Length: 297
Image 1 (cartoon, helix red, strand yellow):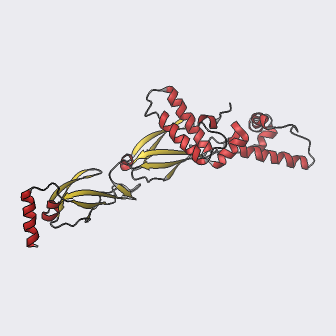
Image 2 (cartoon, one colour):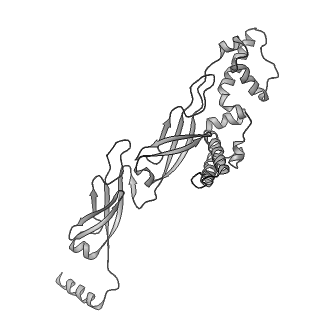
Image 3 (cartoon, one colour):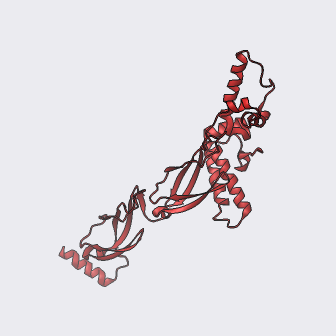
């Protein structure tokens, strides 16, 4: 397997911080995302490389292995165990099985001899190793996660079709079993962990399953009452305003909030706060009428 310089792919140096890696990944992922580059094979390939680089470098443990072992970083644990076995074998007085000049350039040949089955004795000693876990980040708009939908992700040069349940929260992590790194010597694959970043592209404020919004109410509607039509996530609703409604009054629309994660037909509530606006540019007649009202009060 040819060496891939993940730092170069992200345009970073080897001493880049975690924040540098995250920032570079987000910038490049947006630039080469398939949705913004339809039918562009070059952009698609670049997007896959960016995701692969991020999966390794954004994980401190994987990054350490990559820095030390290069292209063979996924087999670091097997290599360390094999070295220990080699040292134990030598210390026990056994014949020298491996060359004293063994170095990092021999990694691939070493793993081939360990796991490729060159001899029946080596096959008998082979050990199964679980594949590495992968980490990915997915950015979605708040409006995207109001309903359950499917999305295709490209992870480690593979397209994975996942179902994103309605109501998923910002920062939430879900596990996709078996979609991480390939196991060694017949061992199980690792898992894929996806962290969701939810961007609020609406006029609503979200707090778990509840939504909050503010609507303007003119003075006359606040004083006399009447109907107002407001927006919710699933359409418009008509609301009755009580006479003499005060500024800052909050009303609750039950079940008009955000869906509850993985609970069908369960929703939070929508809270509406009234902001009463005063009339401006009054005519002389309107001023006279307000003066009359003031005298009555």
